[in-house]
Image 1 (tube, rainbow, N blue to C red):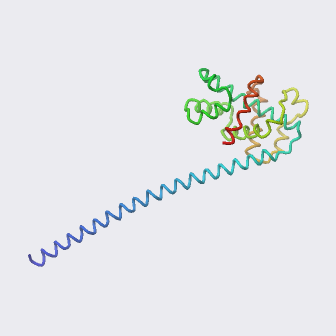
Image 2 (cartoon, helix red, strand yellow):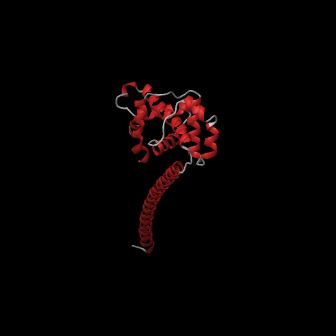
Image 3 (tube, rainbow, N blue to C red):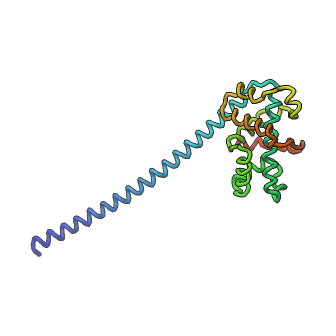
Length: 214
């Protein structure tokens, strides 16, 4: 074997070793990229969870810090109750075959998470009413926080006490998410998009407690 042949063989072996090392490095880089993407997704998910929890804590703090008089609280509570009942009623109208299995608004909120049909109808109802998910969360939070001590006032009684409930909400509710939700509730009622419901539907709203807190 002459020197040139030996050199070529040695060069080929060297190139093979380099190629193997490059392949190994490429595999390592791919694994690092996958790990990085995985960690990035976990970080983003965790950040969203923290932001969501912070928003919920802020909402609860704002609801519990409201300085309404008993009369003012009852008026706001009445609007909130009627809107929540309206949402439940509209869902049942679109899902007549599920009336028995969705006896309360809580059951709708609970089952929409895993049931696509209920979720699609729920989202459709919110859109028709001009509401978003964060609005219903705020309204449910308000209802849970004050439902045990508040009393429902009819529209005639409400008008006797306060002429401009929108002005009252704007001045007294500082949390923007809560303020927007309450203003939307008033607007829905005043425009006649929500209806008065029987007592059994009002009492069924008490089951909202575990849904919103979770």
